[in-house]
Length: 312
Length: 97
Image (tube, rainbow over the protein chains, first blue to last red):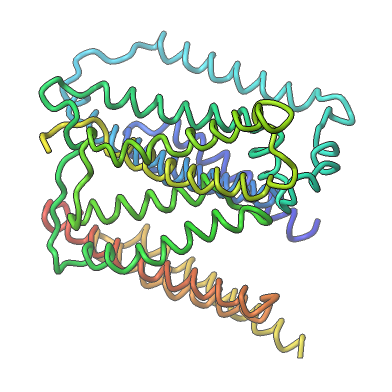
């Protein structure tokens, strides 16, 4: 047994252990902390599987963004939990166990009983990689071969934001989301919020740019930009833009709009919807990715900020 | 020369792992929030630094080495800031247990 295999077995065991711990934790807050650790460890497994793109997304979304969302939810639920008279009975618990175990068994069966060799489009994707001149096969699939899925995914993000905003009450509709944060302007949080964003912006843009040939891309870069934006807001250095702000709404639709425009252009100039003219494939895709990064950063930041709750 | 580099790596990473281990022991054994934070940040900063130091000779390029150093510096910054914030919250909340 070599050392790499031993490491993999240990990491897999720890992931399973953290998963079980997350489920049996009595406190919501502890369960969320367990879930964040679970996401970060899962990212390690993706790295070991050479799926670095997936690992980056897993760490950013499940470890970072999802963790913050769930922590907020746990904090809101805490008061309600204390006052709750009715606790879920043994039947609800049993039902949840059966349902989760059923899903896990079905997934495991799906993986274990794959025909050998498993059906794969990877060779076809690799053979046609030259069409876009991107070195990262994941970017090829996301932006060219399965561009429709990526376009719809961005629209779903926007719909999620509309869903969050629709929780606002009428009087503050169009107002600023989330509370106004205050922090000591000479304190340590404000210091971090001044020092880190320039570095984070460079890393975010680098991830977007390097996504052409190496692991990275619009989603990973956009998540880092969103984190930097939220840091500045949490330190009280600036405020969330109001939901009615036209400029912000333009940023929110920039990604899907540019994507759609290029797609419709393909209908007119190329062979069909979302087919890029080969000579311009790379600049077109990079343009879409830049617009998408801005949209993703704005959408994720606003999703975390929540519904509008105060007048601008 | 490569033997020397490998020795540096083994010594550096082992020392780093030792500090991570002692930090974890401190996190579990120390009595209150402030001392636990102390154990965690001191050990993590030093542990990660030693791991990075040990990995530097294995970096394929100057750029890779600089990235490793950046990871350590960013972790230092984040660790120092977050421990300050947690410590303040713990003191304000009065829950030092």
